[in-house]
Length: 236
Image (cartoon, rainbow, N blue to C red; front, top):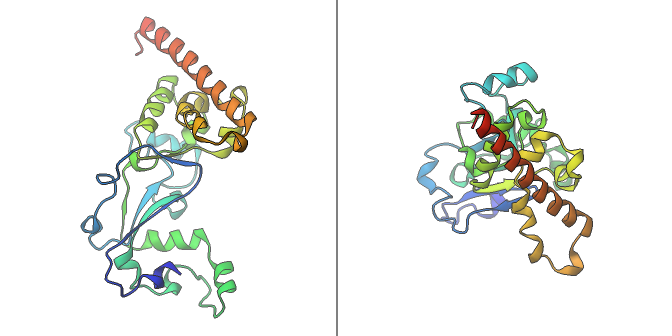
């Protein structure tokens, strides 16, 4: 158990949890991961699922299309967050993991733990919000095609500047024509396609690799045409 393993060892640790089809876009981490003083007394720093929360125009779209409020535990991204170990080690497992009380055997503890309860407790405790660039991801407004085409391109640029990026598995595997316009234009396929040469030939999935290359080429062509038309119309 990570919480107990490092207890009383005199370490000031920040735990970064990152999962999914995640790639790290920055070579150096020195200026990306904050030191322990950044947390102050906060237990965690969480990443929002909804990227446009706080946007002067698009933030209101969530209320029109989805019932979940921005400050609900369900709106935190369970695939990327930072934990302050100095605070974590002072808590008991019951305070974070077990909604129905403590279990004696390890198997029961694992089965009783849920992301929903864990993130509810992180939400209830004093916490911070990670900046958007820390974790690039899909967004409900992208998946619902709820933004203008220009904003899809802007979102693409933003994802390219992120510290990490995790695109949905289904989108990475899908054919370009099976995706919505928002996904076609917003997801920087090129960043994943550039990694193909690093995969040993005998471990490559030829279908997936071909799909990524096609999506990269089609996106460049479509984006170029949109930009040209936008300039003509005075929209870009």
